[in-house]
Length: 114
Image (cartoon, rainbow, N blue to C red; front, side, top):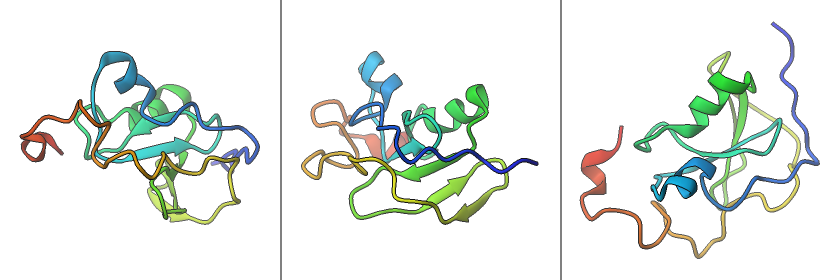
């Protein structure tokens, strides 16, 4: 196994899950790829785009993209790890609700999570 590439200067792809935003979907929490900046939804979210990004890209390390969280996760090794501070912004906007985004989360969202 090679060491995962963490690029601390690449910015996040946006303020929400790229695929959910494109499809009009919603998410529970967000994860940011530490290699390319792709923002995807977590495994509790209906679509699980962060894990799908890992599988399609081979980029194993994500960082939480939630306000106040700075932890990293390595999908390949299935372990938490430490990493450098990534380029800002380091989370979605604080006024963006979790789950989010506002206006797209169904009232019965708790029954739809993994």
